Image (cartoon, rainbow, N blue to C red; front, side, top):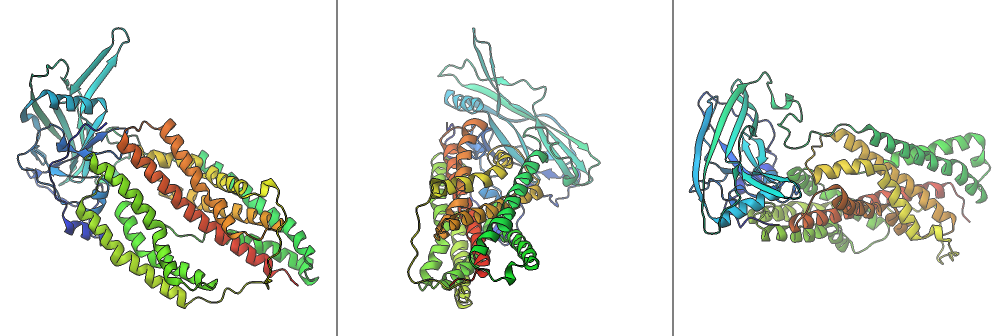
Length: 569
């Protein structure tokens, strides 16, 4: 439910956005370099509010009936902050470095019944606020709600009108900031008549304390007052489960390649020399090495706001090169349309999804709706950097393409394909090829969803990359095995089958997102629901493209190898 109106106007400056895009911006949470002297003013910015269980549904703080200056002055925001829904503005709180304050009045307010009802709805939906002090976020709940008893039922709602700020410093730098309502009694919002006004007095206190911690990064993770859950710990059970599956699949593929495939090759009249014991050992080892090396030929994509945008724009040349290079190798002539398709394959679905999600945010006044300046900046980056690099890469790929060089001679008349059993159908291959890679990451996927769509903090990027490598390894192994089974049935139409078989993992990921939304989260409301399913569908599509590509090239390398070792008449 949306309880907030449209925000008062604010400006997001173009220059800081462009500076961050070029790598000179400053992200929230990164240790700052601000040094203070005793008595220096410390600016506290109010930022956003939103339901606790809907992380992507956020609104400007001043959309609530709270203490607000006559003229709102906004902080210049970086691209990463804008994409994260931040809208920082100066507040009425007066804080000075190392000067304690005891119950200072912030403002007096007279709230109408409509404003009180707006606060009541926000508190019932567990709205929290976020302030920022010296690039340190501090969070707390807007109010207090108590439900007790069945008969008689008690429903009490109160507003926190006093906040205690606790700040720690080391030397001339702020190390930690927190806000608390401990030992504070909420102001009741119950029992107000429709024509009655509610008088409120907002106050605050500031307490400074010295700490021996010299840097913010040295502070123990999760020691932030406990507002959000502690950082996720290493989940070895998930890693062991995935590793066992990888070893089983690698062993399974190795058995196929060493035993079954050797017998098949013998039936195709290999020379006596190639079937000798010595070369048989070399053949076994070469297949395993080829399979292992094929698992890790992947691109690594960034995932954090501005870094992801910049990385995507700069690597467009790679997609253009690979696409045009392979397209020309297989005899394609319409390379211009191939480049247009390459640059549209991800950008068009992403733009359509973003348009729907952003429109819903804009209609509800959410800060997650991007300002016009940011939209123009991102469009300019794609038009002036991403698309031209795709074209340049495509031209280089086309000019440097060598002949496909098929490993054996092909016939002009296609061979008749015999009827296939049901377990070799496309649907079964998609089910097996999608489920096994998904099962390798299913446990870790929960923690990823809890981070992206919840309040968990995931910092184990080394473990995440390891699981990502496991996913690609499983996908490559399954692709090789399913392609072999298809060829063993004399069905040579492997190319799109290989893309669909392992690419179907994206469908399993989307189905898991539906399960997560219904059973593992407390998300609700149109804004959060559209955001969740829109980007979950896009995520499944991205995994389809990524794993489908890995599957295709793994199968292509496998087929090249086995046909090099065949003597076809």
